[in-house]
Image (cartoon, rainbow over all chains, first blue to last red; front, side, top):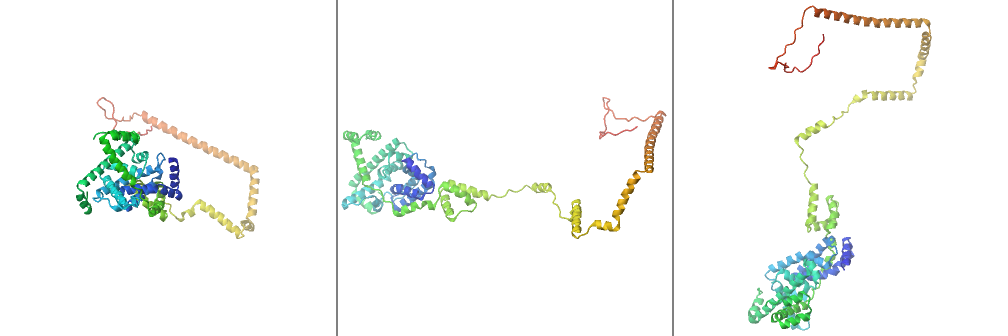
Amino acid sequence: MSAEEKALVDRCRLGEDDAWRLLVDQFGQKVYSVAYHFTLNREDAEELSQEIFLKTFENLHRYDGSFPLVAWLLSLSRNLCIDRYRRRKRERSFRFVSDDAVAPLLKSDDDPAAEALKKERSKILFSVLAEIPEDLAEILVLRDLDGLAYDEIGKALDLPDGTVKSRLFRARAEVARRIRERHERRGTAGAFQTLAVAAGGVL
Amino acid sequence: MSCTELERLFLTGASSEDARRHRDSCATCRSTGADVDAAEEIARTLTAPEMPASLRTALIEIPRRTVSCEGAERLLPLAVENELLPDDERRLSCHLSRCGGCSEAAATLLAARDLAEPIAPPWLAGRLAVARPAKRRRSLGWLLGPKSAIAFAYGAAVVVMLLGFNPADLARRVGAGELGQNTRAAVLVAESSVTDRLGALQEKVSRTLAVWKGRAGGYGRAVVSNAVSLIWKTSGTKQRAVERPRNRDGRGAFKERETTTTSWRA
């Protein structure tokens, strides 16, 4: 697979428009998905995706085909994603995820109640992701939201597979614990939470 | 709360059945496992956001917006020579605004072109003026040179010939040609006559005598001069010896600047 991807990259280096178009079609969706999960904003995700592909195009000569191209793309763009992620975390409104932010991530459901429940859970998930350490959050996003394999994540983040698995387990456990705690708080202080959300404040 | 068995099973890639058996037997891991299941369930409900068509178009256009580092290497030499096409200049500019390495390379190349000239040391102008060969003045003196004279002579001859003037005609007209021939014939006759041979012998003898006479006069004057000097020396008049200052050890010391030798003749 990497040999085919290396050949594709070489064709791009030679300036073949068809090869570049093929590369965009193969990896554009994945890159946009990762960018969206890190930014939760369409404009930011588009901007970040363009930045990632610009960087990819400018560094095509560095790809040696030793590991999957998508992992190489993400390794090139990791700093960009982390920068956006930190910028979002600095914003006070980040932990309060809007309906519009998660809407592109949900399938339409015939049952409005079920759709509302999924939307609420998604908002909680991204809100909790903003609370946990970055090294845990990025692995959970890449694995559980973007579906990357362990070796691809390891190559992208320059980590051994064991470390990837270990961090992924801790990330899942941390997210799960925080969701449970929120659920428990909401049960005891539901009225206060509702007021806080209605006021647009921070939980 | 400190059980790590569930994490160990996950890291070792144990089957979900093994993990479930442990969760059933451990209260801590049962709670943690339930939470993880809930989080994973949330993640599973999410789908990948669809990439907008406008973004795809923008991504495909990237090669027209910028160049790679390799492309920049090819364009930079042209940029230094101001020979870039407008599109390439725009693409290179886009890349340089984003790539630190290429931007540094471009700045260095362009700066090399604009480096200030080194200031010459003050003595350099004088040294160059001395070393430079004297400029040849354009004058008419060359007309007086031998080459010019030869050229003029040939030129004049050609002009005369072109005008149809033959010097032989003029000599024939004044009889010079006949005169020369008669003279040469007279000389040949004279050389073969006995009288001229005797005259030549007489001339040779007189020249030889004159040579010996000169030699005898010279030797005679030398003999007389030597005799006079010998008489002068033997007449009791002694030449005073040159006195030189003496050092403490009795050796002579030369006077200052007395290093040049002088010739002495008796």
